Image (tube, rainbow, N blue to C red):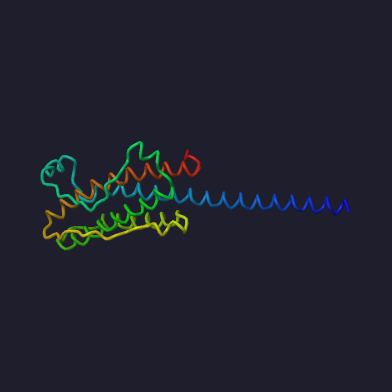
Length: 203
């Protein structure tokens, strides 16, 4: 009887250890997957940053001539990136917001692509930016828990008609400037969230 009791106790402990191992392995796999997604998102943001200046393809001294004639797009996201804002970030709150901003820039880039096509301006940079924004949106969705996907929002903004190449250039400058701010802020946010999720630092 004593032998049966000890055997049952041993099996019970073994089952507990097996369950702990399975859960630990599952958490480790999930964390590894999430860390990889953060790395991929940061890569997409860096690629977007490299493309941002090419949207208007003007040199720094040339841009100074447009300071007084810039066109504003109020539909572009107003980004928060203060130190206090960073300290308040949580993964499941920040990623839906990042998705919303990414979708907004995707709408604006695709609109600019059509506008430039209509006035016979090249759109290769916009096509590249659109592709990276689309991939970034997909990665954000993968990183979120399924129950948080319902919080994702994307509303197409009402954007003005563009009738000439000069206005298309002015809008290119505006979107380029705001995209750079978005990329800088997003990269910092993603790096912070990556650390918050317990991901190892890159060497």
